[in-house]
Length: 125
Length: 422
Image 1: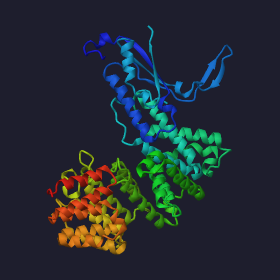
Image 2: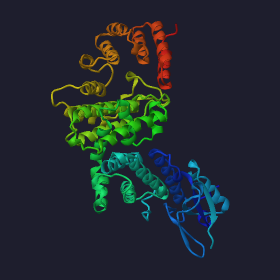
Image 3: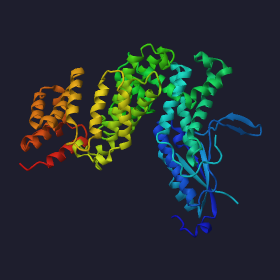
């Protein structure tokens, strides 16, 4: 699954963006201890990616609320309209050998613990 | 909200930081906004913690505590500005001019101790019962959710919610969390606070949940809150010192209380090398400083007993004479069946097994003890040591039948296995 060391530079030549949706952020029933335990899992995971040379950016966490602008009239509305399970909460660009490899990485992230999902997209260029 | 460059990788969060900041900030906001705004304080802090969880997934900020405080402050100020007309706030925050400065000062680490003390003494109101005191402390000073509190007490979440509701209602009537310096009934409330902290400690030391009877973090919280009382001149009473000493001595034995299988290890079999020496030292310091004022509270006596155990190299080299003395005074001051049981066991060590057996047999009619597994285990232990293994077996069976957790039951079953076959 994971490329062997030594061949990493060569093998991890493609970039993928992991887009995180829903999950713990959209839940309002987690206790302080549960939140701390969850974030500890996340940064152990992202730290592991850095050590494997897979991290390509520092990750971006998105806060609420925001605004959406749409149409030729450029109408501004409050916040993203997505249902909470579809709400984008952050993203991370990683290096991987292939889409399959990137999916394997995405499957190991803690997003699913509280019902989150991850979209994996190749970065162009 | 991102701090830009994350802190060095593999940074670790302070243990229980989220719980501790919940307690700090809910207390601080309640103190500055007035107790009628506890729900608002809870929401603001929950939001700040969710924000922290989201933002820190890819790396920790340089100063996580300051980060949470800043987010909570901004969020509180936003809400107060927005809702100033609909809600009633204390006069300090009712005018926008001073708002930022007032909130900033209220949430600053320098005010943390004063806020938590004010909250603790308000929660331990004499008109509320001890269960409500402990529940309020677990919620607002330890940062446990109602579900987690219910898990500790083996109570359903609705029961816990009802207690918290009662607590909030009483706090609202107070109108404001008074600083401990200004409490007219400080001594009464201090006694309630100490009793609640004692219950909290016991819930960690030998709690009601059979699947997890030992939860050290509750002991740690009880000790942290007790030491908070010692940091303030008004609340640093000799009784509080004595309780801090008691908690230190008992907490020092936590690493040896359960074996690798989660089974209780009796005192005589505990590996004393695993006791926490630094804790014992701290207990001795507290105990020495508790000896002022000339009166011996229940906490002084219990600390004295715990101290004798903590400093003894073995059961045989324990000063049982002193322990008997402490239990005798305790029995005079506030007799209880469990005190009588422990006195009998100390007498068995000081004066011999037969003396202990006589005392224990005399207690057989106590209803509370007849349902207490450790009473039967104590009788069994003495029978075993006297060589009467058949009687010992019978009493161990009684203890097993009454055991409240696997940790207790297996502990008694092991002692049966050590008996000679009938």
